[in-house]
Image (cartoon, rainbow, N blue to C red; front, side, top):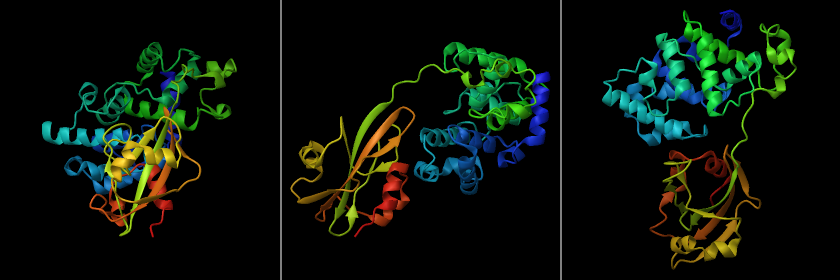
Length: 346
């Protein structure tokens, strides 16, 4: 109880004034939690306001098209979050008569909602005594109690959840959960934690043993995969182009230029000889230039994408009818968006 009391007291004096902290509306809390998965608060805030402005209620979100949702999400990354958000909104409105689930177990059934998000919503909105465990919580608990079990191991996930559950303030679980997360984000930071001013510094195991930098422990990450993308940027004589909807992978249902993925970087000759290139420009003349001399490297958590944008000037064709201005309406990845901001059509 001492642990919780110290953190809650610190939180009440030091918490940031964030928009989702002034409400217990489950729709708004859910939205904020989904946005803040894999996203810093300062970046996520603008998206939260955009979503609330465009979709003030879950009914508004449910009745939007997936394309509208993805376009609004553009630039935030991890797009499966947006697709799951939209799917679950439709499920709540259509299958649950618009009634938001009120318990941890029911919340877990929503697509895109795991242990952490279900615990956050259940405790903050419905006062259920269920502890959150996110990156901040792992760090605070690992350091304070001196735990070196890897946080991304099966044993670690179970151990930290159990400990967090034992420590939660049963009278006010929502405030307790927010306090631990805020403390990890602001005080017990990954780099340069403020141990000097920490209210727990006289009982922190990691501080007393001088092992702050060693905790929390993570098992070795998966090997990063390199991928090689060649985007075909079509530029016709009448200033038209072509984009296609991605049907798989990280950018599912976002739009992109026709893509040729290769096992390594390729040159112009290999591009011309590729079957996909020949199929795209059957019987019409083309001239090609490489827009970016060096590959654009787009780094994701588990893969690095080396990208070349090949600008192909070609004849007017019924296969290439999209005006350049119209591209702006479609949801695209930040990789494509950055290219569009640099590319000027003639």
